[in-house]
Image (cartoon, rainbow, N blue to C red):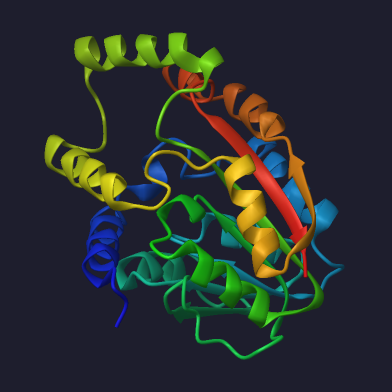
Length: 254
């Protein structure tokens, strides 16, 4: 059993509770049109030619699943929350080239050299044992396989985003309207305090850890096209949210 068993279970419980409202929360649901195209662009550019065997880690309700599947890949969408998978299965019922797998993204238990590519969105910051997870991902990739990570530093605003964070705090105080109530917000803060990346996940911290696991040819790709696409339709409040944190996309190869 993992030394972080209790933390893993707290994370599972938190996201299971969020499963029904997940898609309605800005930054989780992906709007069709420009935003969907922006999220899919790095997949189109950097995943192997379709149909490749692609593992999506922490698929949640299947928003990213739709994008990678629509590119023609054979997709395994993995999550450790049955509540999240229930939503994702219903959303994608009857689709070919798609299987859902209930498993831990940090300990997949998948066969060696099984996948041509692995991708994940907003997962790495939640890992309780990141070094073990990265070693596992390296193991299950085929030689030459690609790793595509969408993530960011959610612990504190970036220097250029502090004004947006202050504006959002004022907005919340005056207007309210958050989908996450005080109890869930407190649970989230308690989880973050115990995570290895709870003080912040940055590209510069993550890259050496992936290299130590064996990954090579690391590249930082810009998240800005996604933020610009989101701002086309999201309204002022959510537009501010796109400006707060340092987000990045990381590409690597086995």
